[in-house]
Length: 115
Image (tube, rainbow, N blue to C red; front, side, top):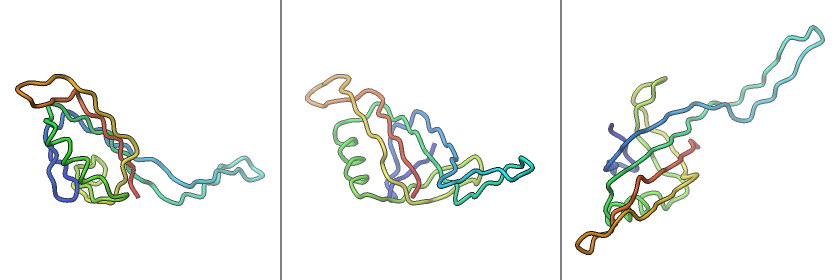
């Protein structure tokens, strides 16, 4: 799976979930009961799991995602290969073990939302 943040290819990608959601909508009904929807936009939510990362790789990912918005390139099942601006909505990391002075982490879960 080829996913990159600002041109940096993510190491250790275990899985990636791509979801399209509707943002800023208003649903109303007319007198006949027909649904009327004011659809403003659809955006992507990405949930990425990374595994087997070293502390150095983890710090690099955190540095690349430090800005509020950054460019993410990924494969969308709806659109195909695409790049868009995202922000990091959720970022968690748990220590797995330390070996020869290098800290390794359990699967890292990143939740990103399109701008």
